[in-house]
Length: 483
Ligand SMILES: C[S@@+](CC[C@H](N)C(=O)[O-])C[C@H]1O[C@@H](n2cnc3c(N)ncnc32)[C@H](O)[C@@H]1O
Image 1 (cartoon, rainbow, N blue to C red):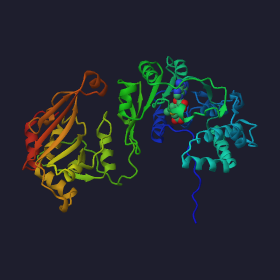
Image 2 (cartoon, rainbow, N blue to C red):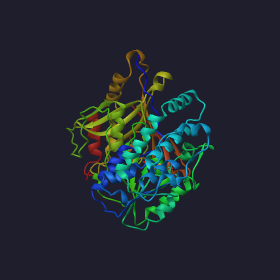
Image 3 (spheres, rainbow, N blue to C red):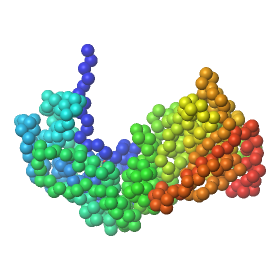
Image 4 (cartoon, rainbow, N blue to C red):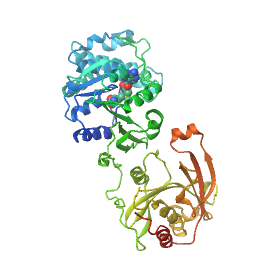
């Protein structure tokens, strides 16, 4: 019989994802700025300090801070001027005293390992069965788990030992360096209210010399971001989504990295307060499940009456990958069905479609969920050509053949509807092709926080034409206007 090996959840959640850390290394190695000091004011599990060092920085040039016992154990173990014993840790609960009994704790790593074991045990106090099971397993395997923590600390210490750490409020740490143009500050504050207080709550199980600094709140996050924008120091902000940027960080920041988080499907970004024109810095990660051969992106070559236009159905990962490449500033938008729009074999656009209602409600309408093309200076109305193509009978026939099994084939749709979020009350792209059927104006406050003021619903009759006809009409309409 195969037995499942006991796997403990990590103590700390919320480290910076690996893609953003790799991007930070390449950003630093491009030598965009050489700094005297590298600041990680929300040290957490020190993944950013590790990244600074991987990029070639001496640990002693990093300044770190955090407020929890967890981070302080690491910080005190790695800061040569401190000792973990200075943290004054004391087990109060009898069961905890017993758990730690006899575990070697006479040096920083030993004592650190036993405190980490205590923290993990304290996180397992809930009464759900699976938590109780984990707690029992932890007690039963306490020695090997302790050794894992101790050895883990030691191997981190081999990499980043020598750093500077203080159990300190991040706003204070950052205030020391904001005016220093030779300082690089990494800003990834706690986004979820009270999340870390909850992660490390211990209800009288142990005590330590806790300075009781409160977790940074939304107001603090926002007000620091405002100050940081014009600071002399370079500040890099890590956000998990464009909404987070809008809500907490604001405009004026320049992205140096963006990728789609494969778990949350959100577009996470690293932003800098030092704007750069170098778009090559903007690196993005491919989905691991993507086919090896992806079509090239449209290279802005001339579109002529002979150009070949087509739609190619792709899976969600591929569709969202191209969405991420083409769309900036919007959150990820899931659909059920994805198509790439190809110009002469190159991906020039991506669109998402929703069909479930067609089966469930016998709705006779097709719903386009999003439609974006590459941003193209030469053809500012490229998007219009794509939407013109998908309101043709040719596309609808292909779509139904590829997505709707004959048996389920209900009445064919006679129109296509799409909803656009826009800064403007009407979209030029749609004029003459679609009819505006409703317009919702957002309140001024909502509009300014969203970055667009209108929700526009457009509908188009499906046309008995071909892509070629649409292409000719588009070329004619914009003749002489292409740059
Ligand atoms: C998103 S995590 C940082 C993760 C870290 N950069 C890493 O990758 O390991 C946010 C951290 O901010 C810390 N924190 C919350 N409020 C703070 C404050 N007022 N001052 C300093 N750190 C704080 C939390 O304890 C948590 O470790």
